[in-house]
Image: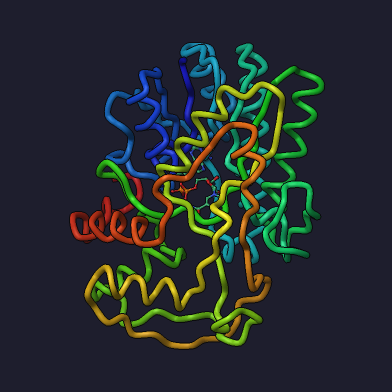
Length: 326
Ligand SMILES: NC(=O)c1ccc[n+]([C@@H]2O[C@H](COP(=O)([O-])OP(=O)(O)OC[C@H]3O[C@@H](n4cnc5c(N)ncnc54)[C@H](O)[C@@H]3O)[C@@H](O)[C@H]2O)c1
């Protein structure tokens, strides 16, 4: 298939793009490199420097490459920042996403796989979370993802664009020379490993008085390679659908740190900080729908495998890819 990948110079998009190339698809990556890295663009994929805000360029690219499907990763994704600058999130994750859909309509592309998020649920009423559970986002980031899911429904109804929205929980791990390099890094696993390497003095645990077995927040981690296989299966799905992507297993922050100490052989200094507003105690996916309907099976999402692959990548890339754009 010819596939247009937005945000394919970013963490998840680069790994998924590489898997697509390896599976024989023709991949075109578009990215404005605001957070992505040219070096991360998978070999064998074409790269077009393009901001989704630029509707004219987007339409030219979409017409020129005539993709059969789009996978849409590009977004503002720093949850905390969304509480300070909601405009940035609604502009990039909603308005620019609508530009992409309009370019698809113009070029006659009728399939999209969208990177949604567990942040669409907000504070869950039950664990594990199912797709039909209430969606009450607690930050503009989650709201922007939910808004785009709703917009997708109308583009399907009115323009016949089929969609699959994949609600990721926590993506982690590295593969094929590609790893996680966000600036600033806000995700637990890279932070813990960077602390093990001495790049941070300590890891701050935001609250240790939650209603969880050890008092720290519990999250569901999925290896990026398992996310990649979910996207490849989603490309074959025709009825429009929303799927959780998670393992159904939660790990607390303290558990992650202990496992990281084991993998790295280093002691990781820890500080206890305040709770972050809007941080649910547990976010764990019920992944039964995608397992049943698309036969998706996570193969690399054991915590030890996630940590080992991410640690190896960090040892090989102690400075990551360099600043965004490099
Ligand atoms: N990382 C996670 O654990 C996680 C969890 C849930 C959802 N998601 C979603 O998955 C997607 C990918 O996440 P990631 O961690 O790889 O993020 P990332 O920041 O590494 O990648 C996003 C990419 O999109 C590009 N981009 C952003 N706005 C753009 C625009 N207007 N035009 C062109 N390119 C643009 C950035 O330069 C970057 O390369 C995002 O949509 C994110 O919201 C991620």
